[in-house]
Image (cartoon, rainbow, N blue to C red; front, side, top):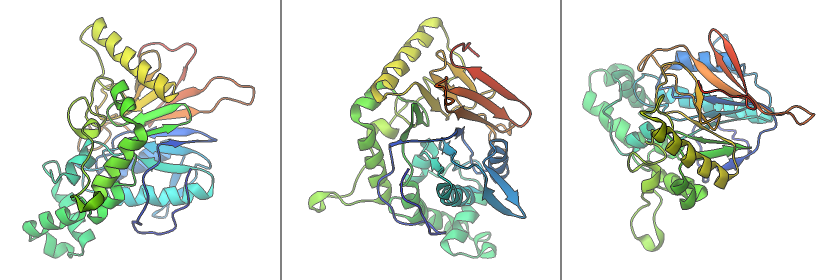
Amino acid sequence: MGEDESSDDFPEHEDPPTYVTATGRIVAIGDLHGDLIKTKKALQIARIAEDRSGQVVWTGGDTVVVQLGDVLDRGDTEIGILRLLRDLDVQARKAGGAVYMLNGNHESLNVCGDFRYVTPGAFIEAAQEFGIPREVAMRNWDGCIQARAALYLPGGRIARELARNPTVLVVNDTAFAHGGLLPTHVNYGLERMNSEVAAWMRRDKLPDDDGYATPPFLAMGDGNSVMWNRQLSRESYANPIDRFHACNMVAQALARVGAKRLVVGHTPQMRGVNCECDGKVWRVDVGMSSGVLNAPAGVLEISPPDEEGGEVVCRVLTEDVMATYDEEALFDL
C-alpha cells in the first residue's frame, strides 16, 4: 500500500496509486465538503478513529479507508480535514491499514481557480495557511483570494498535496471514483489518468520545456468525465431503459478492471448510502456536510470473505442503524 509518510506537513510525492490491496475491511466515506464535525462522526461510526482529548487517534487496525473526494467547498474546514486524513494515514500504515482520498470535481474546480463555492471561513483558513494572521485576513478579502490562489492553483502547496490523490482507485475487487467509471475511462488507462491529473496539479513541465501539463478531458472535462459523471450516482432513473444502459456500462467498465463493484460519491442521496445494478454500484454521498443537506453521517463497510471463502459483505453504517446486504441476495434499494 505504499511507503509510510512521516512528515506532519504536506510532503512532495510521486504519482498516486491506482491498484492497492487490503487485508482487512474497506470503508468508503462520501463527500465531506469542509465539515470537520461530520468528518469525525463518519470516522467514529466506521470504528476507525477516536477523538481522545482533542487528538484523533487511529483505531482501525488494517482497515483501508477511501474517501471519495469533495473535501473542498461548502464548508469552513477544508485544510483541517486534509491534514486530519493525512495524519490518520500515517497512523494507519503503522497498523497495516491506509487512508486514501480521491479527487472530486470540487478539488478540480479549485485547482482551476474556480472559488465560487468557497465559504468565507474557508477563505480565512486558506489565508492563515498562507501565513496571514486571522485578524488581518478578516479585514482583507482581496488578500484572502490571493492567498487561496497561491495555495490551490497548479503548483501551489495545497494543489501539490491534492496531486497525491488518485482520480480512480481499485482496492482488491472494488473500484472507487468520485462521479463514475465508464468503459471509455478504462480504455484511456487508469494509471495514465491518475498520473496526468497529478502532473497538472503539480504544474509539471512538459518535455523539451514545451509548457506545462494539462488535465485529461476524460477526468474532469464535462458531464461524462470521471469527476462530473452522474449516470451512476443518480438516485433514480427516468425509465428502465436508462437504468439498463447505466448498469450495462458499469458492468463493462468493472469487467475491464477486474472489479465486482464500483463506489461513487458526487450526488447527495436522499435515502442514505444505497446500491443499484444488483450491487455493482454503491452510492455513498449522503449529503452529511452542514453546507449540503446536514444529513446524518453514513459510510459503507466492505468486509473481506471469511477464512472458509465466503462472500464479501457490504454494510451500511449510519449514526442510528447498521444495515447488512448479502451480495448473493441483493435487492434494489
